[in-house]
Image 1 (cartoon, helix red, strand yellow):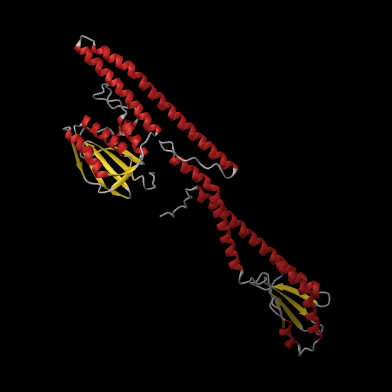
Image 2 (image 1 turned 30 degrees about the vertical axis):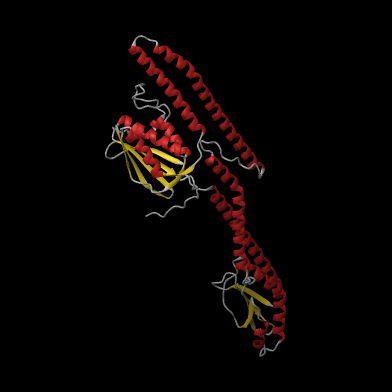
Length: 443
């Protein structure tokens, strides 16, 4: 079983924080290593300087003392890094490290001119050096040099840890200040829904941030202007077409051939409905939305299904929401109406099923018992003017805008509309609506 690989953080905030924190910690560690190395070098230099003075004085003192008194003075002359002993000492090897050679040279400079001195490294201790000295009376004296760095204060680890914590805090604050404008920009882009009514970004902060905010606000205003212009153009076309359509219907009524008169009237009705559906779809894109309000979901669904049943249509309702939801009721009713109408058109029988709300989300399923839709066509049917049936007869093919309008309206309600073939046959539309009174978004 292979070891799990390290995963790179997905957010820019965590990536920048990790890079800066690791970089600063590494720089802090290198600085500490360099400082300690320089301190060690300074300590060695001081130690060797004192060594030449103290050792020369100590050896001269021991040389002038009677042989019987020398052993008593040895503890008095001992220091933290070196000591004295009488006797031949340990037989080692010539110094083979820079540090050991510097110590040996210091011994030779301090006492090598007055006494016979030989320096050896102690086996197992590369930087430990013993100097074997022959005193004036022929006695053997050993100077055992044990290098040691300056002691580290007990508070130093706490200070180092505190510095690392301070670096982490400063990194977190700096990265947060740097990435917060990007987060605001992303939030503004998410809020820029079909209604195009999101509040503009504050054009403040660093020059780059303010420039990005101005560009985003200008883009939002341009999009809103283009959408408004498109809707106005479509509305004007629809309005201007009413007059020639009305004249054509009047002329069609004057035809003596009843068959041709009926065909002409159907074509004109289809043209009029197509123009109205096009304007309705453009308005949903533009975001001409009603205000959200809290409604009784069960009452609204019961009223919708009751209207179909009163008209003699095979529509049934199953399940209860047993809760109110803040949404746009007319848009919701139109979505469900489009779904039910499609089901009745192709299957003749429709079931509306309600799942109990969970986490502020209401799920409504509209199922028919028709032939269903091929899997590769389930998303295409949401495209404007896309029809599964090649026929241009509105009674069978329609305009191809019903589902497109339904999905667009669902988006304006912070919802999701999906289609799927039911395991037991037929097509099922699933509408998930988030309570607009609760802040949430779909992935």
